[in-house]
Length: 428
Image 1 (cartoon, rainbow, N blue to C red):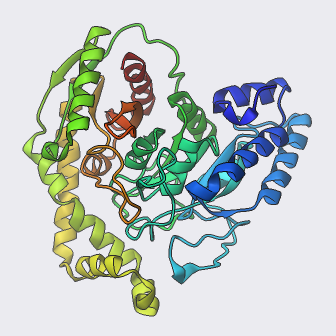
Image 2: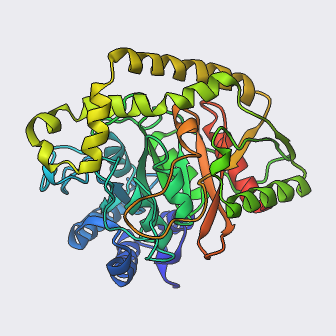
């Protein structure tokens, strides 16, 4: 048999169901891959190979007993703002060093129920906001993997696991997935329950997955939720009508991103798509202008205990932003939330005219250095709109690092977003 660690999630799941691959053999292969590359990538903040192998043996036993789940034997990495009962949950902060919750986060519990193996906890920035961890880009360790889902994106890009849980408040799933050459899927807001997550922004935080392919993202989401996420590899009966949107932050797109999106648009048109450029209505632009006030104001509320009892252990950058958010009048947050609601209403009318929207995933290639994780300029808008977003790899930039194109659909149209994302990836 070829190296099982190179198998996609969909193929590994098929072989496990057929009995030609065991969860133990698959986990052993993935752990060997991790051992070879983890010293450079540093995707994990906690990894216990013995624990993972015990879980794999239990998965094999349940499969033999006829109790295999839809994700049986597949490997997950868990961003360390999501609780795990059998591994530390430290939220990227020294304040919570060694913390061991009593229970799993809901999404982790659902993954285990579906038969998945939790390989380990992946690096997050501090409380999924500021102060990056040590993780490097798997394509060039001198460059950031993005954040805040740094370890999940780098691990997925390096092939360490079949799916990594990520969370997004501004751009923390889509941007790092694009930087690492992976597929990032931020589902419609609230699709994956946030129980057991270190929530920072009630209005924005969304749990999603980072995988090696669109089909793997659909498989992971279906296994976690029982929902219908389709078969993105199946060719649709027609080409899509796509809206091309650079958005209010268009001036932040670097030359490689402009060239990439123009190339993708031309390829989609050759494949039969209708591509219509459009500008966002004023109400949507106003929603984006309110993003920072709502995000930082709500996050300051979420860190009230840490502020009152351990402020000295917050990084200076985070403490500064949270102090700003804390000091904003309540009316600012309330107005921002109303602006979000108005933006969603206006956007619903816009997206109704398209199958999906095509837009950048990030300003450009992953920046050099590990001191920052890049800019969410092309993500915050879609997060506040609560819509499903998918980034797919569509080539490389001048430094040879991955570039991603982002496909967006209306609220609840997650299956369509995945299907059209794969269509765009193949066309490009």
